[in-house]
Length: 89
Image 1 (cartoon, helix red, strand yellow):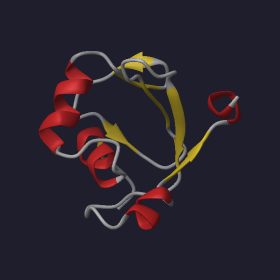
Image 2 (spheres, helix red, strand yellow):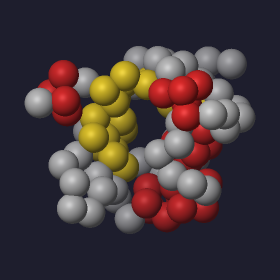
Image 3 (tube, helix red, strand yellow):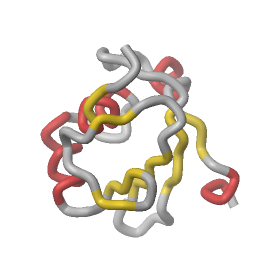
């Protein structure tokens, strides 16, 4: 597997508790892929840059490191992405 849907990946990486919530946030324009708004069915792959905007928090920019079709425990989900240096600062 080298590509997967954005909403599935956000759910598997534990950014959102459900896929429907991930879909809602993507549709609201709070998730960007490569600096552009996306749709839930957008195909993403390793090395894609994703920005997640949450109310009351600074934007979180992450680079996709792995793909997973299942939602695992938090330590496993954390291996799916790496926060960018700009986002950490």
